Length: 105
Image (cartoon, rainbow, N blue to C red; front, side):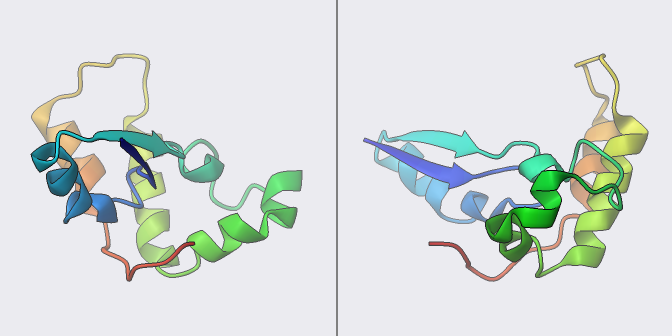
């Protein structure tokens, strides 16, 4: 058995309950949207055909836009090809996370 859930730096709600439940039940987790549908890979105000037409994305990331923008700004500041992040860099990446209400399907 495996659970598929959105998991990225701006959507981490699964950590609260489901990750622990899956570990307890020896179940797998399949994360999707690690780059938050592109929100963590480009300037926040940059638009693409997807940002203009993807209604699901617009709904998923409408709840905490200020917090999401802050997370994306830190990602842009920290981003590099060096995959060994310092404890300070990890703390900065996770520090602006804003918990959300349950949403989705």
